Length: 95
Image (tube, rainbow, N blue to C red; front, side, top):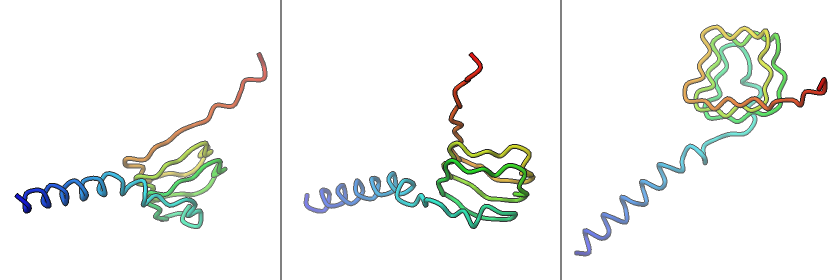
């Protein structure tokens, strides 16, 4: 009986740790890796202007990217697997 309970507790603890690990492992910043062949898995970026930069082969797997300007950037062979990409819309002042 004791072994069964401890096994369940261990399994539940490992499951909770596994589910929380992406949130814990997410780095903020890592801007020095925002270059050609850079690698920043699980990083978080917000409000950057990367327009026109050469980012060939960059690995941003599992990263969170909010309001980053990639216009006219060279993103050949870039990896965004399981990344969260969000664009914050600027208000239309012409209306």
